[in-house]
Image: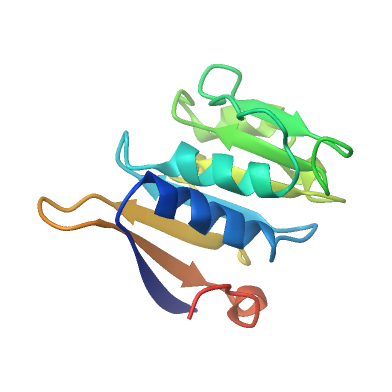
Length: 151
């Protein structure tokens, strides 16, 4: 796996990063978003969902845990997942996340609550330094090396 980094100087850049990722997203993909509360995980997911065709602003799945989107709402089925409120990784089994990967993709906020990840997951971490812009650090699995949409 290789790492890439990208500065996110403002909310528009975070949205644009999500939109760029949407162009490379395909069925079977898992995008794992980590970062502190308020880092911009949901903003990036909203940009991605918007670029996939979602007309309205995607709500945060914090309380629902999973919000599925299907065509024609989005160009491919995608589940937006927020595991922040998950107390035990075993609770995730009830969510049926593998089912989404049959013909769609997963965007998972707080994936560390699972205790594991699919090997080909695109791991994105958003950090908020004391000085300077937010930084998106990506850990690219082999399936994303050729699709990564940023220089």
